[in-house]
Image 1: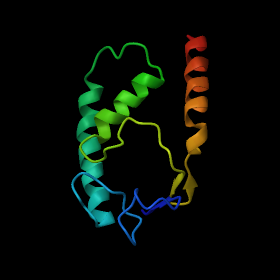
Image 2: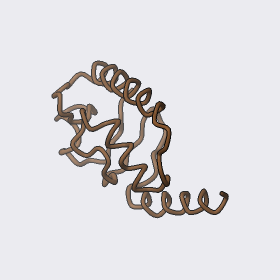
Image 3: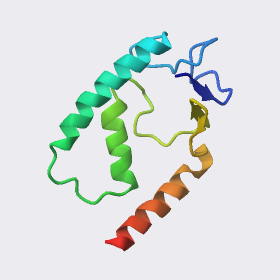
Image 4: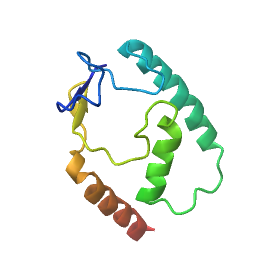
Amino acid sequence: MAYSVDAIPDNCYEGTTCLINKLDIRDEDKLNFVESQITIHKTAELASVKNFGEFDFSHYKAIHKYLFDELYVWAGEIRIVNMSKKGTNFTSAESIETIANACFKRLKNQN
């Protein structure tokens, strides 16, 4: 399940597509397993929260930080590199904030 990251060597271990992580896991299969275990546990914890407050982009980033902070120093931050995984391109880095704010504005207007 390799990530494809634009050529910025600070994001992956040299010669790999394995994201640099706080646990220094350099094997992609092991990192995928550990990431899934952590996020499953933390998602279950979040499911028990009764009141999230206003769900906006800041709140979304806080959830991202909560889910991934044990693994990545950039958890909760806006991505600055373009990425894809399993042939699916993620939103371009330069468009994330604009698209996210438009989506949250649309959601707010629907309520």
